[in-house]
Amino acid sequence: MNTATLSKPANELSAAELKALLADRESEEQSQRIQKRKDYEILRDGTVNELVGGALHFNGALKAFKTNAYNDLEAMYKLLQEHSSRHEKGKGTFTIENSESTMKVQFKRHDATMFDERATQAEKYILEFLTDEFGDDSESDPRNKLIKKLLERKKGKVDKDNVLLLAGMKDDFANANWHKGIELYLESIVPAHTKYYAQFYYRDSVDDAWLSIVLDFAKL
Image (cartoon, rainbow, N blue to C red; front, side, top):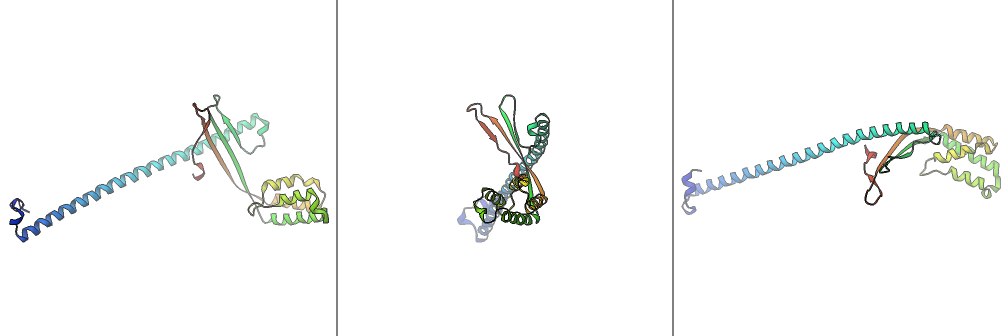
């Protein structure tokens, strides 16, 4: 659009000039919309890239910290075992504090186990033993009630702690079915995996209370 046309009053413009002027304005508005969209997309992409990049950085740093922390705590536990017969056969669970009692770490180790098909057969042997040993008076005998309680499953799964309690009672009876059931239970134990848990705390100088430092290691 030339300068002469733009300087004319609107009532002096021809239809063609009005049409051209409107087209120019629409083109300019379209250019502004396109530029605003580009500006928005640049800002959006920059924000997403910066935040996700930062999240990935801290995620990687947290993974590295988790690995180092567990290695250090495992080493610390081995030293604790060497100096304390109380922990020689422990499961790897302990709490340590600094000398000032301003910071502490709780470390837990959980060895998960599974039971294979022999556990079902073991249970049958134990139930046959109960019939042999206690007969019709089985329901009134506290030992029978205890053993049946230990045979109960949790959410359909054999309870390892209960099996170990049964194993500790092996020499209490001289029944062949009882011994066979205990042996099969112990044979059916299959190591699954080991999980580690660590929680970190610092003491609040105002309230003198332990405050947890939240680090979600479980999903790393």
